Amino acid sequence: YSEGSPGKPGSVMVAEFELDGQKFLALNGGPHFKFTEAVSFTINCKGQEEVDYYWDKLTEGGTESQCGWLKDKFGLSWQVVPDMIGKIMSGDPKRSARSMAAMMKMGKLDIKTLQDAYDKD
Image (cartoon, rainbow, N blue to C red; front, side, top):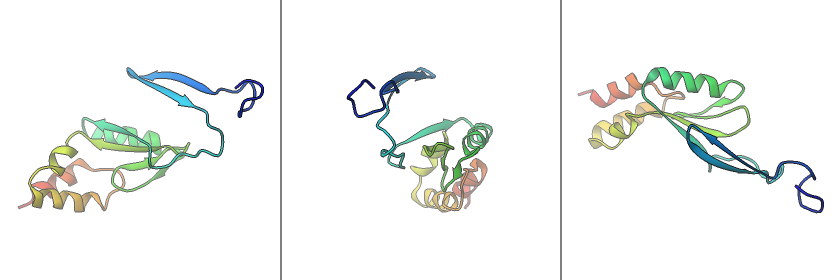
């Protein structure tokens, strides 16, 4: 920010960065703009090991929520989900409903429990 601007002179107004090939632009709108669940990042994980890894790292100093959602220590919302979630949630309606019911009881998602609920006859 420069003199006469709405931010503190000399502080960062805009920052560009790249994470794993994805470009981001961050705007420092000041303290009156807070993070909300209206914006979140999704991490699609190949298996339970990845779900566990990202969940554990992002909940350090943060808060767990429901259905694979969490807030990190800065208050930013994340969804940590297995790749297979789309398949079981858009498959056979009765089976998908069982998986959804199981997921509603979870914080961190458990792939085996979701798949077992889907496969149950």
